[in-house]
Length: 240
Image (tube, rainbow, N blue to C red; front, side, top):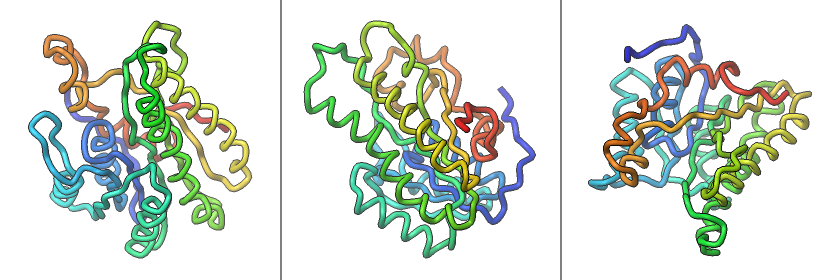
């Protein structure tokens, strides 16, 4: 499929993309860079692995090859101190934060009774606490300027009743509700809060855990048109 490009000018804007080292996050980061945005890649991945390729530095090099400006930062979105440090570095480098893409997440396919307590806590900390901490860190910087875009990568499974995937689905439903409530709180400040429900894609994560004959039928990570729509506040579910 040919790569699509959306005529969106984000020159001078700064976007933080969590989980931006690979998969959907990487596709979004590259698309926003093509649209002219400065990019902050916030992810834990600093070293490659044979089964899960992709690092903050490799994605940064691809953005630089496009002529974009990028700041790779190792950041654990579950740790408030690391999130605050990441945002401070972004501000020191670019002077503003206009877009936050809460993309970092973990997947778990277990049923309710199969889910270990440690797994439950990890899924909820990454998928719910992470977006909470990152959003809480950037909102005080967006509110004075009455401008900003918070984009959250949710999942169709947030509304699924199919057996299995219980904790993952519930974490995404919680993310949806949290951001729905947030949207009503920040509407007066002209800050957009959006949810995106991507289908299964041929990402590095799914390639590592699913059979090749299944993964090969999946589409690649979202194209530039879709990713650019995120930052412009269109092409996804707007909550206010």
